[in-house]
Image (cartoon, rainbow, N blue to C red; front, side, top):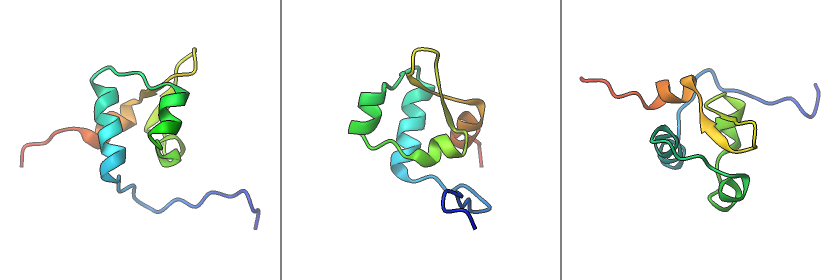
Length: 74
């Protein structure tokens, strides 16, 4: 087995911090690499495709990330 293989659970259960950053991004905030490092943005968000990078290197939410925080009426 390769040492650089990344394990993914069958479902993504975001932490409170991950949900917070996704919500901030949904509201239009672009997160720089410096801010991401300072606020310990989870690499899982990138690995699972919840956030992506813009052409200038800032992080932004993807459609998959928006689905994660979509509000549903129960």
